[in-house]
Length: 497
Image (cartoon, one colour):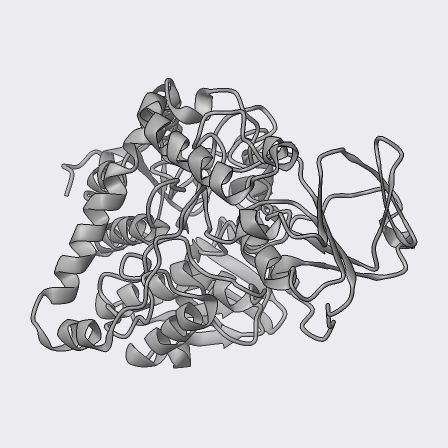
């Protein structure tokens, strides 16, 4: 089956792409997703306490405001409902191809199209938008003996709701954003909770509150009220970016976090285990009001020794201590810098995106990639944020995608890709901007790839990224034609639109 635009993923990125395409008059598109419903991360992550750490009015599409948010920081069910509501609100359900996992997407040089092999059949498309998302494939460490464990094992992103944790001896591996949310939820019900911590996290209070019915009514009826609220949140969250770009600014926030830790964890030995010893922001800053208090309960142990091996009835640490467990829950995050989807996308000459991104991910404006014609990658390299909503970044990228498609349609161009020179200049600029930021202070995090480069985070404000993607720059792209492999000198020189 043929379509003009194929979209991989039905989370925020994929649905946003579909809605923006339809509203712009590009109605020949299909959205492929391996799940039985839309939602992406917010469909898959159903662990207890799952919620967003970005304010609700900012963690939503600017073109699809939701006056009914019930909380300043919404939970997973409400965000999932919002995304499903957007599908019906904008009438894109007929364009969805659910339970269609994309096994391979390969650029056909002669036909100038992408050929897709999916679990629901084969398709072809002129344009491919990859919106698989960086938080879609759980990362599980390869621990010795894991196959010998006699109990139940699962990742937080694949929560086993059929496995009752009441009275269980539970080992939680990992202390990232997911664990900070589900640990306080399960702690009261389990017999014993052993938390295996590699690095303590910086945690700030969650300034959450219920949104009253009066406020909701105002958002629905008062013109501009919700837009004004969103603008205010935007400015507040943007100001928080200063601490990431200039680490000294975060000293006040660091003191607030440590003061909260002292208040919530009176035991000096446990408090020492939980005290971060790296610059705030170097790793993801977490927000919670109940995580640290939950670790002070009598049925909780925080273990900082490394895990040597798994045995049938528990875990053994490097200090040769046996920790009994009948359930292991991994809160170990996702494949971000090594996403499996990049092994399935093959561009010019059959080269996979994984090969092109070895050892480091690189993309022009975080969106298009040299050697991969008509491919637009949402939330690609250096488009993540540590201080505000990535939905802002997605919308900036979608603005660029539409500008590119309009240019191609106006000029009768079948296929384009960024020049290697433009991509190199962009990457060099990113690396220069990273100098002096908190991510260069020396800690290890999932922001960094195997070479130590930060290929995940945008080293600036969301505003600066949006400004850079406001215009499509044809001079930074080259036109691809059947049977002709373009190079940096064979490109279209036209005025920027």
